[in-house]
Image (tube, rainbow, N blue to C red):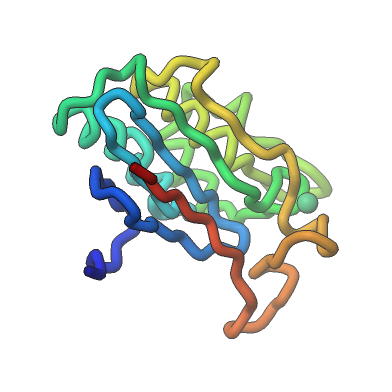
Length: 170
Ligand SMILES: [Zn+2]
């Protein structure tokens, strides 16, 4: 059975793989071993702006998960070092995340840079996920060309992507 394409999926089916392909965007996997749910989401700038990660948490809780049982891992994504954004992006994000501005934005070489991984960690914390239950990779997909693909590094539309997946085995 194939689940419909979406930026976020949750299931309690065993032996079902939830997959996100990425190349700079932030992939997040979610697990609640007690309630038996797994989830995955693809958090680009649009999904982050729309608070997809907290929505995933809310959905898991509505399905019966307890917030303290949910653990999350954020996969490799573009780092603050390489994620330059324009003024429109900056102001749009400031409108939504001003309380995190000092943590997620840096002005370098005349351009705003944003830390999308940290923003998603903060959003998961805001949704109630325990700090000890959130793990993330400190790597940058654009800088680390030996290990990762990067849309921004590729500079063309048919860029290679990485697979992130989670499977629940019985
Ligand atoms: Zn970088």
